[in-house]
Length: 115
Image (cartoon, rainbow, N blue to C red; front, side):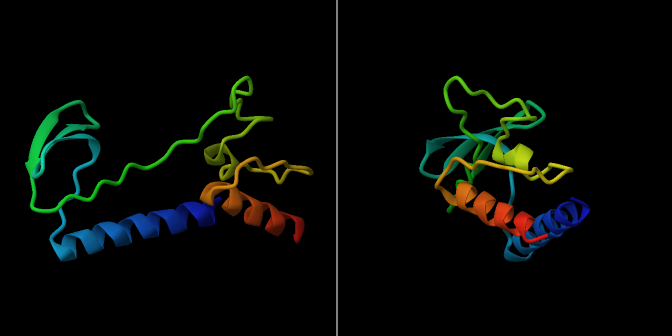
């Protein structure tokens, strides 16, 4: 877990450094396109800012989707977010999902079995 956290931290710092060197302004929050060159951003601290730009990158992120009737409990039913923070390797695991995250979790679980 420490190694994962360190790798993520390095990646985030690296991307922020690339943004800075390329003159990219990063505005974090929930954005609404109000015109082809104008975005209203509700920042994480609750304030709002209108940003004008020639080009916009929309990075929506993602969140795990629950299966109806099987809510994530963080113990027996894990989201992908929960799965990457487990402190103990499970004896058995079922991975549901065929997208990028599901495939990554499958590869991750296979490496668990090789330990």
